[in-house]
Length: 300
Image (cartoon, rainbow, N blue to C red; front, side, top):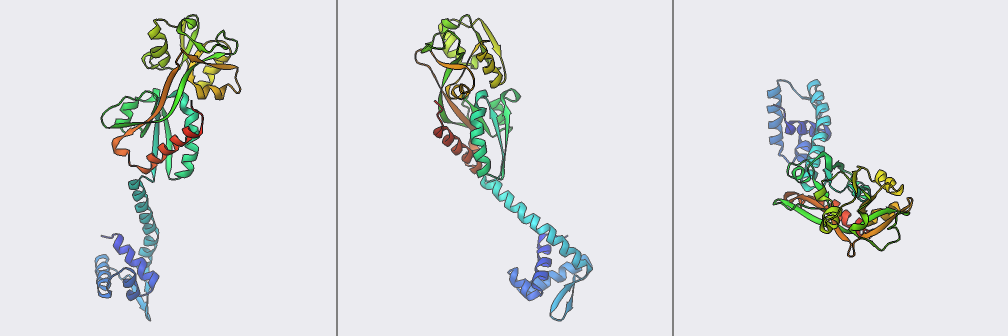
């Protein structure tokens, strides 16, 4: 049966022109190489070379194997290099799960430089409503989970990458637009707009309304940040978002951030991954960039 060793012999003999030179190139003795050639020709039932003076010229069978060697050997060498890159964490597919709807703008700041630094790694993103974050990590559906609310489980590691403050967002014409802070009872007549997330995972409820035993007049869900803030700008409701994101949108929309309560609501964004993947270079590279982007920008 033909194998890589046979193709390497065919390529070396053609390249070097003689068995002696080919043996040196392959780090074999001439007798060992001659034996291997005779065994291969016997196995195939056809001569692969004939002599022209001191040089060997391939027969038709030898020409066919040489063409095969020139095509297959580079592919095998490339495959080995790729597999070694996978083993070192230098190549792969980075699948990111997002449990933080407003973090897409932040993620874009990371992905651009990351793709430049890691040209052999592809990036894909899944939204929360397409998967369950913890289950997706354990099931190897994703490799990194972006979340403000980590659920610590054995086998998973969560690392904070930046801090931010959750703020109330109102239109410039809202009564609270000029206030230093908003209290829960001041929003009892408002429509609260949030992402489609379970109420028990919404900090505006768990850390603001529920402790005060009150609630907004209405609760509406919208999936996209742009539409949500257009609704707020039009006076159709209020929402709660990271302060850094609100400041970005406030450059073009008539919206105002207001602190939630006297102390505000401090949050962190975490990146979660499997313990067994913590030494993968391309994952570590993403986390390093994520911390750097957070440090270079005002995320508070």
